[in-house]
Length: 169
Image (cartoon, rainbow, N blue to C red; front, side, top):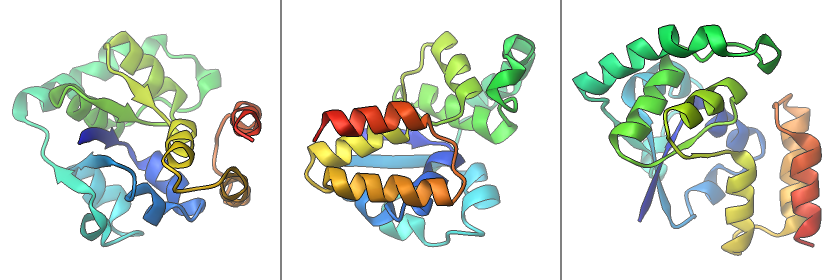
């Protein structure tokens, strides 16, 4: 089964869209760095490990890798893309590299760094498409979930997302 490593914002998007149960029905495994989970996710959404989220350790060498990423990349990231990736974001990228798998993120700057570090990336849009393709969600249900994400003030590429969903009708 394909493993994907998530940062915090993807799980927050799924929760805002009321898609958490659907997410864990996909034929994929989802992992997250232990530190990121315990600091950012568990306080507001405890029990995701019971749903299937893998709480994973980033090995020492990859922790060191994550620590050097800001000095290599942060000065090159455009401010218009929002905040620079946090230490926990870089841990998610390092774990994806450690496990040689895809990183789940909607963070534009983290996507740029992942691309430079040759790590594949998927976001909320890709997950919605996978849910529809796996017949876990209808396109209408996906639009409803997007509405909930908008109401929850989530940051997605709205025109691109709506265009993709309309193409699936």
